[in-house]
Length: 234
Image (cartoon, rainbow, N blue to C red; front, side, top):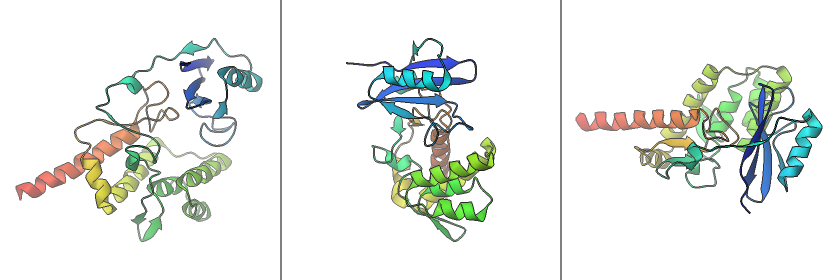
């Protein structure tokens, strides 16, 4: 049986989605809760269920009865396969993911992945930074960082996030020539982070998110291509 992705709103503040992924139904929210948990790790969301009716019941239990559920009209997620799409690091084009296992060195410090560095740069406390850095998995570094942001109620600005991410991915592709070559081979296609859970770095559930990760990767790709052209002209 085929299931449609559906959504509902609680006032003008939050939109909740139920998406069929594999054998599960995932309930998550955009934008993420900053006081009651986040869409990725802590708090109520996301939650997985065996049937959408259980997801609906859980949401009603926590927040009360929502507005009627409506089908989501997907756009970007249904575009031509000419796009370079990525999300999980284990999947095709997973090397583009910030969670991909590619250690980087910045200012004489080794970071297990670019995600470790990015998450650590959200903080100024050296104890938190060290804790983020020593996590074995990139997802764990993300969890530790978010928990610290939540505890301190201090969240980085978009400008700060973009600056840190630019540094992180440039180090990754500067220091791993094979990955840089694979990034260059994606030209001239559009790169999108095909995450249904993130409408800032990815395209979100409805395919209309900002896709900032894809934009930064294409920006970096253009930088490398310009450098190559400059060498040819010399």
